[in-house]
Amino acid sequence: MTALALAAPYRRLFALPGTRAFTTGNLLARLPMGMFGVSAVVMIAAGYGSYALAGAVTATGLAATAVVAPWTARLTDRLGQARVAVPAAGLAALGSLALVVCVRLHAPVWTLFAAYAATATTPNTGGMARARWAHLYRDDERARHVANSFEQAADEVCFMLGPVLAAFLCTALFPEAGTLTGALLLFGGILLFAAQRGTEPPPVPRPGAAAGPGAGAGRAAVPAVLLTFLATGAVFGALEVTTIAFADAQGHRGAAGAVLALQAAGSCAAGLLYGLRRPRGTAGGRFAASVALMAALMLGPLPAAALGGLWLLAPALLLAGMATAPTMINGMALIQRRVPPGRLNEGMTLAVTALLGGIAAGSFAAGSVVEHRGVVAAYAIPAVAAATAALVSAASLRQARRRA
Image 1 (tube, one colour):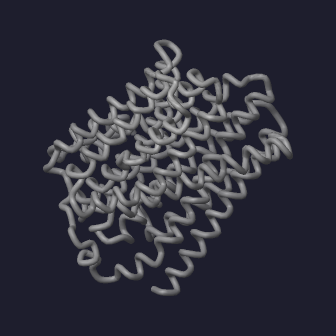
Image 2 (cartoon, helix red, strand yellow):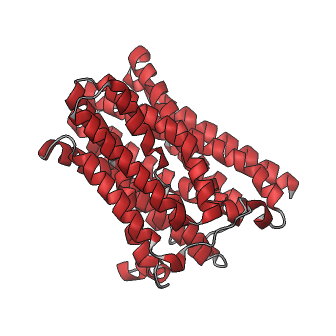
Image 3 (spheres, one colour):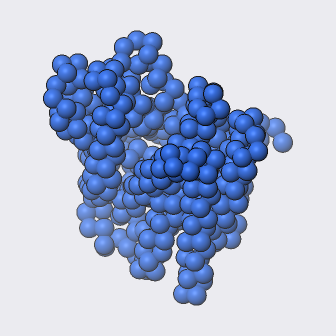
């Protein structure tokens, strides 16, 4: 099969007017999601000479985002994407600019926490894009599957390129360059995205009125999906911390970024290829199967790290990464099916919030194991987290089948 034939489903996806424009704006606004954390750490460490302070500030911003993001998404569902995303992105950009000013002036430490907490209003750009696809192709499950696959691949690309771009700007130009560029991309991208009103889902002032028949049963399954995403986030966070520590222990700390990028590249490629497959079976069944595959492949990094160096770990992470994309694609598809249309942005933002919480927990757990039990032992954390995700999703599937 030729490359053109493989790309045909994605070309058809963008045949509708306005889809290319809103995707361009969304990708511009999404790229900073992978830039802000690295940029803030480099900038604060350069200005205050403390990585501990930099880590505390970024952790505070993550916690604030977990609290604020669902409320921002709920307003988006009720008032519309353009009316909420533009002022929310503007406030987040101002928070980034305030952080730059505080670091430049060497302001009191508490001002750094306050400024970075203001960035918690950053809209869930990936969720808004998925909501648009779900609205445009509400009667075409195949097209929604392709769209979710494309968005997952876009997430991986942004989180691959974002840290690289941030590190380059902060080191090649000046420490504040990454944060300034990220704020500009975020606000400019949101303006372009919001301008495409023809593809925007209509707001639903009273979400409960849009629930429709069977919504109660669907909502009952959403907590299980969120728990699975929480465990999946722990996989991501633990793998990142452990791989950096392993590369450092092997004397190749600079190669950690390349190895992690290989994992993200595997996930990106798997996401695009998965979009070419026609969905089979139920949405819950596909989700449980993909999580089970992820759990199986997450067993690979532990023996790879124990038996060899980075040369053996790298392909194991590549394979493990290829299993995460189908998990995310099917998980987001399940959220889209099981929440009312009037709460779609909120539902997908809760999924992202669960992921962020899992990433923080996985990072903390892996760091503790690395310090007290050694680097190789820490690769058990993502394996256990993935197995937990598989058990939760399998139990949810059995429960759904009993209800059916």
